Image 1 (cartoon, one colour):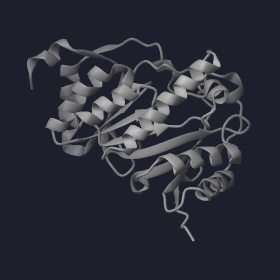
Image 2 (cartoon, helix red, strand yellow):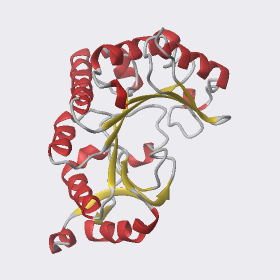
Image 3 (cartoon, helix red, strand yellow):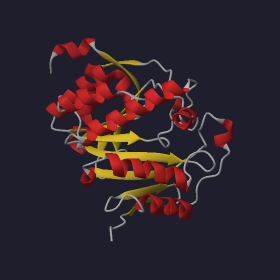
Length: 268
């Protein structure tokens, strides 16, 4: 590996040498990147938002090499990894040179970064959070962003562009919505999100939609910290709502009580 890695650093919040939950069906090493443009009130990694912890890419390369016998992928999480697209790209090159797949968890806010990874063959799967229906005020609220409606419109435009870029590529796409009662996740909310996906994602054979039970225990927002979870039966009903629109597509629910469940609603 070229020596310039010794002089490059990424702002890293942590490294998990072996994970089976961040890319279901694969074992991976997971890199958590510090920094995020959003301030989601339910974020369980909110301590990464403003943290500074420069780590040499040479050291990251060594950690990947140590995990290599046990993994098939490198996964980038955050925070928002694509705030550091240059560093992500260099680490993805390391992964590719070792014959590993690359997965990127992102909020979609940086479409140029998404395009760069795709154009350079550096991402095999994207895990994109759609945090709310694509309505500016709603999206600003759910992301904890103190800005005007025009910024909310730009935020949505960026995320939609990222999704369409991924859709037009060979990369796989998993979309996730985290749901909390009385905040985000009514049947109407899910129908709006599913409707957008149905209308705008062309290559549905590679699409998976995940409904994740929100867990407020570690949330920075005191209201959400004390909000009840959606019960598994309620999560099942949300999956059915999504499935009334998204036909022949895997729809997953993830709950603390039942783990991951898969639904697929066939077209009649």
